[in-house]
Image (cartoon, rainbow, N blue to C red; front, top):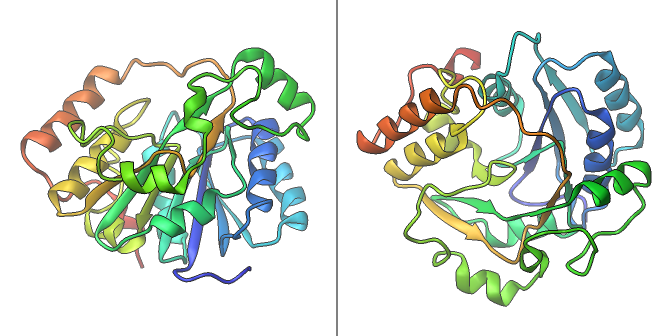
Length: 269
């Protein structure tokens, strides 16, 4: 089934890791329900990533758009905003280019989509040995029995359990999310002006947009046991902006902010 309602855009954030991006894209191509389009939100990668995207576009069952800007530092919020504006889908699935999707990922997110809601899901962490093996041989299949994964229970897929936990899991932590596994209505992202571009560097940009969505009356649901992604091991990014970004996030929570001034509106035509 190639045509779905609502129309779906997958946005994949990446930076200079084409080997991982290739594995990620192949997992998108194998979905039981395909997205209408894929957008690569590229935070300034070199030509190696551009070449990989061109090659993968020839194999892709759906259109791929490469959204790129110059590398002048970690600007994930900026490139995500640009990709959101470029997306044509009603519903946006947001992942990172270092994750591998379970083949039911799109199907699961669509099954649980709901007006006035956004979704976040779990991720399964791969250890260094399994990640290295996968990067050398991307035909390896991943499941909850795979050797070399942590938080193994997150890899168990159950619609019954997912439905039970969707508004119960971490109910007391409303801003707890995983930015590499989220879903939003595009209209809701535009209404809060997308990601806050005052937040550069690593950390809390996803929590901050979640805070504004929640303050706007958009309810969070958690896809536990569905919408599964596996995270390829890598070194952590610098956390030198953590204190500043935490402060911006906490300010949005305390003030019940619904709109950021420095957001995606500048890219709208």
